[in-house]
Image (cartoon, rainbow, N blue to C red; front, top):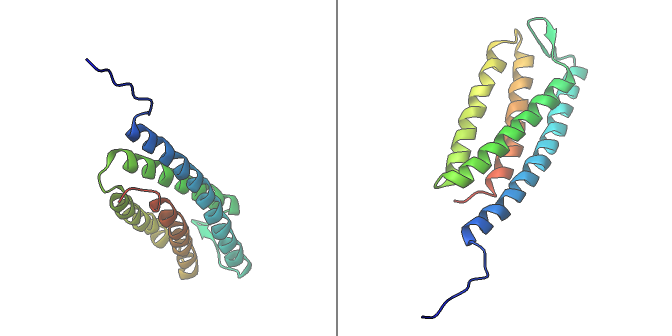
Length: 142
């Protein structure tokens, strides 16, 4: 009886392992880029005397940095999860992240008392999502 010895690793495991690294790298790069852009937007808005306040508490610039990085990390975790467990991972990821971005804008519209702050906060959400979501989606299975 002939015996076949295979020296190649499981192709599914290899494909999954090679796909995780670009998702991690893209999460970091997109998160840093989005953080820089969003923080610059907030700094410009503050310099233009837009009151970045909610309930008389000023939103510090580090708050924009922190929450943008957290959003990028959550997006990267979602991308990795969808890529591993979902069929049509890209479609599910994009749909889910768009819905979550829209939901995350609700407090930005509901809480600040003035329109300028509302516009800046919603714009920062949309810009961050516009940088992070497409970057991560490119690495997912169709």
